[in-house]
Image (cartoon, one colour):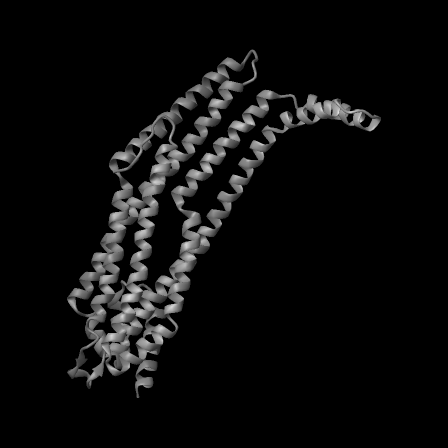
Length: 359
């Protein structure tokens, strides 16, 4: 009997979720529930449940707005800083010619423009604090999400006198399983893959920066090797020294190689700042691990909770819920702390302004 109730609850909730995957779409879920889940429909119709979903929607929208503002400003600061460094190199190492003065004026004007952009963006980011608004709203939204599902589970001890004494606990547990645990597992897995692409691009940019900085040191290395060969004797050594001298003469472009070194260093800083802004490396690995932990909870812990829900044992179901809620809340706290550290790096790398904290 208990196995039958659990199977019916699993099938009913899975069917509803396939038709209405958004957990906030409570009204549509109620309409899609079968008669056997009438008590769950009663719970979902409660005014406090609808208010809870609406509250999450409002908080999440506010968090998304602040997130877009924060990330846009951080990218502007990072890219402006990179362009300022490159333009500074052009001003310093632009080859002299009859027409170079006009070009230098253009470059100088662009440099001043990007410095102003970076400084204004940095001041806005530091004092308007969109990151603080983002993390507060997102923290409030995620806390509201957990409160929403906790509210539903708090009704699990009830039975419905008007529905043939149906037990609601198995249906509520499957609702939480489908709309919270599996939903979040899929989100973490998908975002881990998304951040994998970002991390790969940042890694490629860092590789190019390292190659450029290594290339910039090539002439000095060749001169050192040539000095060693010049000190040697023998036809082969002398031939190698002559060949190396010709190569060194070809590469004797100190302005060019100094510029390559400067651009390489600026690119490395840009990649580090973008990495901090996106938290790509952290999120890729952390989200993958989080998806694995949630997947583990869908195994034996869920099986034990299902058996308990079928016989009305609230203690095991509540213990299962505490474990799930703890993992989700802990990950979000870590995410917020990582973003606060990242903002300090973004501001400190901005040209013309530096902040030691964000308040």
